[in-house]
Length: 95
View (tube, rainbow, N blue to C red):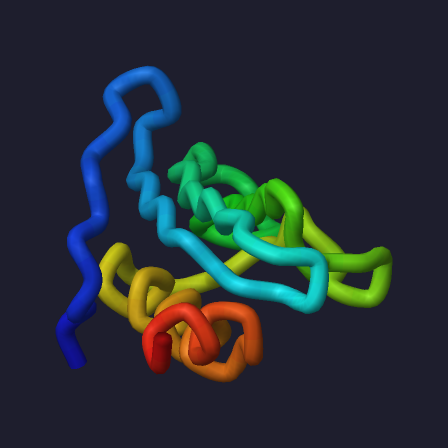
């Protein structure tokens, strides 16, 4: 499966970034998601995943950063799936 969103290569992080607006009960905000490649010797995952939420709905239960094993495309698709299930993102798409 291939990612559908326009991920941008981020040279400083050695990974990728995707930023999107969202709409929450508090108004407009955004998610900034970045994926950072981990060294090959790491046993906690191939990727480190971060999500920052500005004016949004993330809480301690969301648990970032996260670790992910898999290819570049697999981690992107996994984060796209996570994003598609967030009400704030769906509300933004439906406006």
